[in-house]
Length: 115
Image 1 (cartoon, helix red, strand yellow):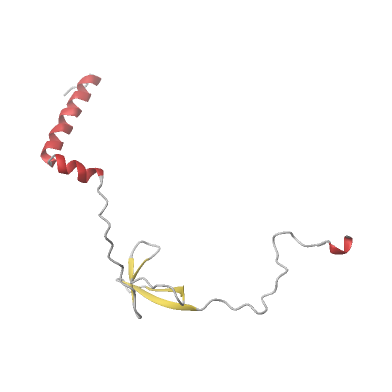
Image 2: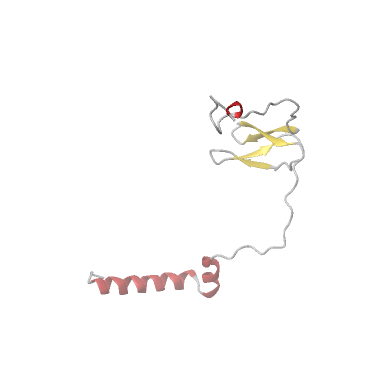
């Protein structure tokens, strides 16, 4: 059994497999450019769909320089209705401001503050 031990190896840190005969997947390098002229290069798989825009690390949007980008597919999904959208269906902004003022007055009165 002593002839099978891995003496001197750090378990889990190093692999005994070699890189011989391994080919990496085909890739393509794509260039994007921001409005400020900053060039960004992204590496995609050869069969990947290339987006027309790319969001940079600092939050700006960069556009594809060369190549064809697949246009986003139109979906039949309804846009998400937020709480604010549903509230505006029931009341106008003027009504909401009046209600807010009434509630704040009620709260201040309950606390004993001057109105």
